[in-house]
Amino acid sequence: QVQLIESGGGLVQAGDSLSVSCVASGRTVSNRAMGWFRQAPGKEREFVAAISWSGGSTQYADSVKGRFTISRDNAKNTMNLQMNSLKPEDTAVYYCTARGDFQTYDSPAPGDYLFWGRGTQVTVSS
Image (cartoon, rainbow, N blue to C red; front, side, top):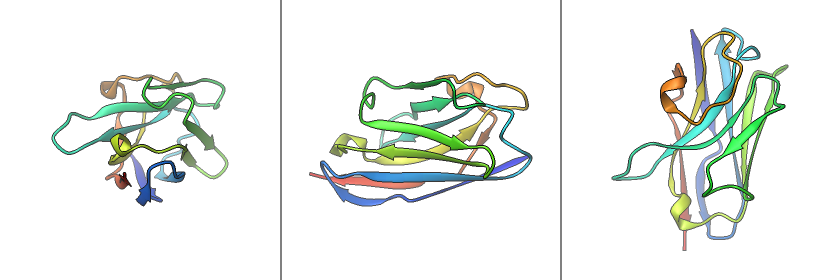
């Protein structure tokens, strides 16, 4: 099993930057892809960004491309999402996710992820 714990959410103003982090425990996450999803009130969970096991491949939702950057540190079992130029529509609960053992490729499909954190709230005021 992999346990994922997010941190770093908060309340910011439009145009500000914020970083959310994820720490994994239990089994290693260095052999699997990871990702971030988010869910706003009244909306379905949506893909934000994903990163391959090595960090060599990343992909982003069109809505965040150019503003968000996903990264990981396998030595520390951590993943980070740097969010710049935040908009009110970025307001959501942000979830850290990880794929199964040796599933190394990043994916935008939520069904490809086996482990999920409990989420951290990000609120962007206008």
